Image 1 (tube, rainbow, N blue to C red):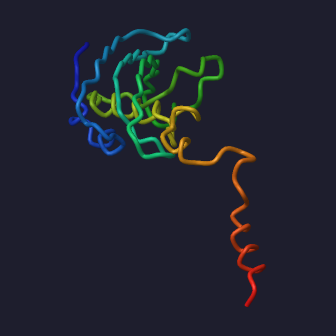
Image 2 (tube, rainbow, N blue to C red):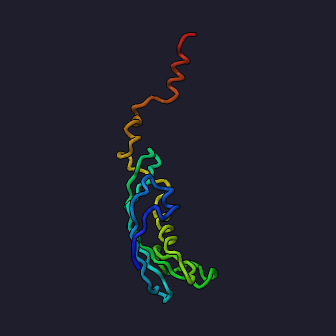
Image 3 (cartoon, one colour):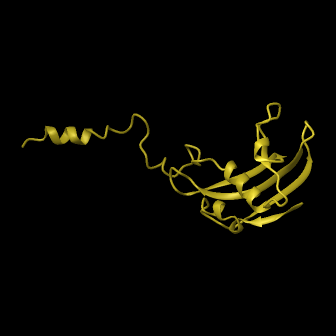
Length: 149
């Protein structure tokens, strides 16, 4: 199954974005794990504009994610798979899985908690003094202390 979703269709993701325009392309394929368990392979691509946590300006971010989701029969079967790689997770399989929710969760897991521009590209870097150039914030207090009364 494949298709596209607009970012506006994903409310939890939309809350993280500066620009809610754009689409997410997804592909979901069924298969089995190395241990013969049923799994879904979720692949998605999206171009997002999140807020830089340093300067609060738009930070473009391209996601290209593929994750294997092993389907467990019940919550008790959700033990981590010791032999599997880090790109494989275990979820409970139900008669109906919400595809929008799976895509939204994968995007939320892929976006950093505190996204930031690289140090040289952030707009606040041009306003901040470089190391060794600025006086201590307490130098103004020292100057006041030296002034005659």
